[in-house]
Amino acid sequence: MIDIEIAIANLDGHSICLCRNGKFFTDDGRGISPMLRLISGGIDLRGNSAADVIVGKAAAMLFVKAGIVCVHGKVMSESGKIFLEKHGIPCTYDILTERIINRQGTDICPMEKAVADIEEADAGHNVLKKRLEELKKAQLSNLE
Image (cartoon, rainbow, N blue to C red; front, side, top):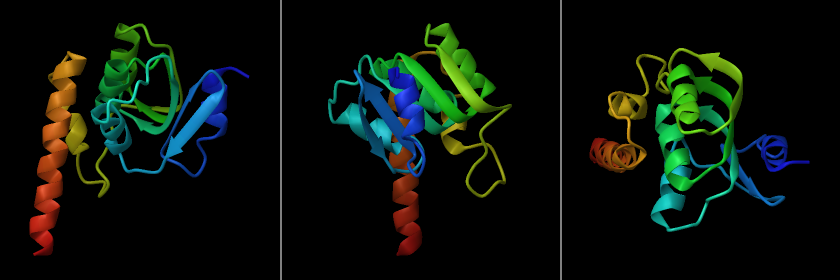
């Protein structure tokens, strides 16, 4: 079995599964937070294949930055697919959608909005880190 097949086979019940050389690990974090955490932690992800529940342009940018070599999304946006293909990363999906919607189902995902006009993975990574921090601060202030 190749790495992407192993990642897909082990995704159920998790938000992401990464696999390289037959060894896989999963994460249950929400949205793009697992990839942001791994990248920020300096984990070498080059050469991994990734299976993810939702792959929009934001996730695609992080996969490119991390050196992921193949991606499967249960749901993938057209912009995520285009970004991966532009960077030579083969991708597959169960469902291709026009856009990724927020958790409330009322608007476009805030992470997708943040990177809509960005075409560089490093710039996207920086914007996504900042946007996630802003959302976390807003959630904390709502609890006070």
